[in-house]
Length: 178
Image (cartoon, rainbow, N blue to C red):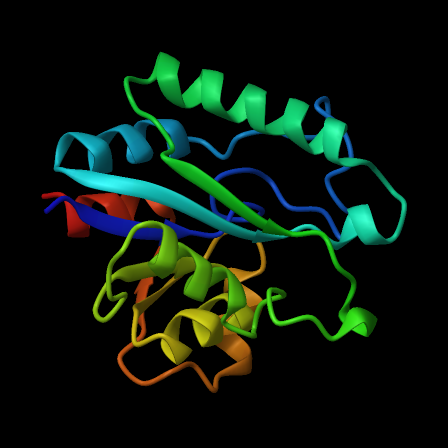
């Protein structure tokens, strides 16, 4: 059985923006993130993304544009010798009250169903409280990176019990794949 690890996207793998990442040009990888994913793969992890993309629901970009951003991400990760096994995203806005938008665990439930596995103790890496809360609801092991909104999240406190804190995805990868 291969190990699984769940990552948020914006602020973990790529630069985040309060104005949303809306185009391929705006999607810029964080230093070391592609190599970190490759490191996790080489240690036997299947890497899965769970990302809120409410810009779609707000009409800021469409699914085709999101797919182009993800194509760029997949290419850069492949160039580093890694791969992302699946991308799960919620296109809804906060007002939609859907079950898939983090902090609700709907995306994580779907990941468990599709990968036919229990997510207990599966590492879940994010930069916001809602990332960690969604994972914690499914008994994942929460891990916060200080990139993106991570420093503000850390300062605000209230993290799920047992949350590990790392400078960035590269540091987290070193922990999970020494």
